[in-house]
Figure 1 (cartoon, rainbow, N blue to C red):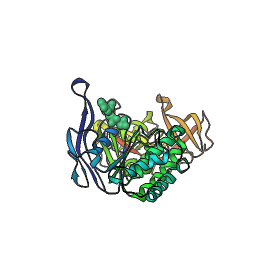
Figure 2 (figure 1 turned 90 degrees about the horizontal axis):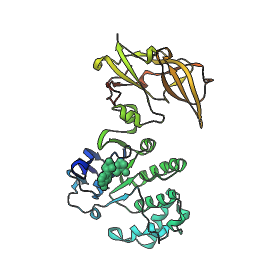
Figure 3 (figure 1 turned 60 degrees about the vertical axis):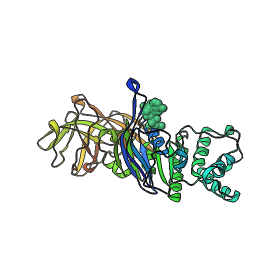
Length: 376
Ligand code: ADP
Ligand code: MG
């Protein structure tokens, strides 16, 4: 077990006009035994971050420390980290069992008896749901099964740090959800410091003790899933979490109130808040909005026309046009039931003011920072 410190690390690939800045002054401290998730879109630098911890890329600035020791000049093999790659590699001519046993037979951890190997492999493969595949060859597996074997190869051997690069990306949605729960248990069982990267916000929220949100090589926010969800530092983070995306409205401040959507949206301005230019953006998550019955006094109310009602499994998704006279803006609402709302009808929407997010307004709708202070 070990702490991991990514100490002001920067990494550029290539040079001159073709240079790509993959990591920009990344500064993170991961605690001993922590399951730490890095969430970011494709190209954000997630794989590069893992490789810099593993020692597979050379960083140009900053330092990586494992268990308090600088890894500068330390070969990957001597870092005692185990990395699961996005593109998994298995030995094609070995069975699943032998693929899993090989990390236990070779190298620095090659001191397991046959019985110990069997026990470790059984524990990991049961958790990953691949214990019935031990005699098969990789060519006889589906992509999802292969990915789980590759993950098993990493988890089967004890290491100071597990580095996991989107290990569930090849699984279908149902299996991914099941594996999330299993992985969580495995993490709690093994308590090995883990750095897990993903572009899937649900995975991040479900698995992370803490999450770092990465954008174009920079860390935008670090926090518990609760903090990242409740208090996104900017609209980029707010939009990165939640499907469908958070609704954003441009609003203007006057007389202690914020107004937008052609007057359909009105709420008290957060106390003690400086609004640049008297303007702000208000964010409302689709799932936080309730349909029908009026909310209390501390609620934001909206009235609009249902333009689209779709069933999404157990949930309903509505597109509701508010401020129709002034052009109209569509609000997405996700609700447990249809509450009797039909396309073309007028409906009332509300949510507690504590769930309203207020951000600075940018001139061109760019991502803008959270403004402090609760609305109520
Ligand atoms: P992610 O894993 O978040 O998708 P990566 O770390 O793979 O992101 O890549 C970050 C950026 O660095 C991307 O713009 C990518 O194109 C670039 N990049 C990654 N690896 C290389 C490489 N070996 N040579 C040049 N550019 C690279
Ligand atoms: Mg990647």
